[in-house]
Image 1 (tube, rainbow, N blue to C red):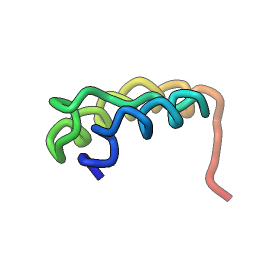
Image 2: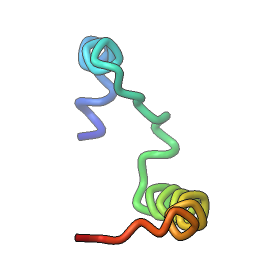
Image 3: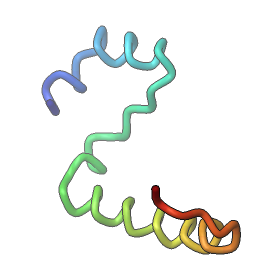
Length: 55
């Protein structure tokens, strides 16, 4: 996957589709875990306040 994302043509195509390609140094399991944790911390209070429930 990293090799594909390093390809300029692939990156351009994905960018044209509106996707954000994170820099190589953020393409690790640790970086993904940190990103997920930050997203949960950001969105959980909003989800709770809006009383959103899983069906």
